[in-house]
Length: 250
Image 1: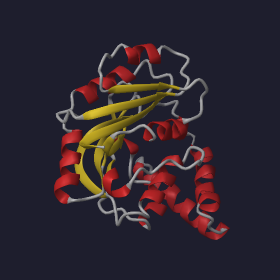
Image 2: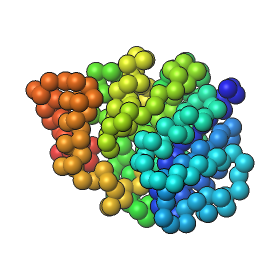
Image 3: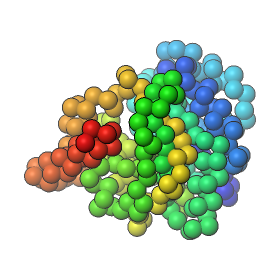
């Protein structure tokens, strides 16, 4: 494992319209010692050919012949990383140029395990639509049960200290389940309050169907964590409440 190499993981599905913006934001990073592992999840558009045209030796593309979902795609990427530091960006999101430099330096010099940052929230055309999401410092294994304040987009962890943490087989809530598992390994996640990324909130995003997501969130507590019905409903209630606050509904 090369010291200080960063492995960037991206699942891609029909992202021809956006992924070049993502690539340009990665290419513009002031921290250049990275590899970008993209797993195309059987796209039906021209995503694969577009990615091949980027012509950067730091990019590793895997193409799945069958669509298997973001969790499987990320796990395939995790099985092929070479970096000490692990981070994630979806195929329609962006980083500011100093994202990697600030987060990696924080992990190294503060001797922390996991860090994440605040981020900007925009529409499909990059127009601001909500106030910046502000990162909460010191999220631990108990706090993470109430909702998932750690975004994939701005998280970086040190695999030399934590190991590689794969995504559980949890439908549409695999990110939350993964952070629950990871935070059982460390004391807490640390935060940088600077907004160092841009999250594109697309109207057709699967995560926007809140009723369906609430049911799947309940199953995280009930089935994945083996909580009883009362505790599962309790945490699902606070997950929903925190979600309303996150998107300015309360």
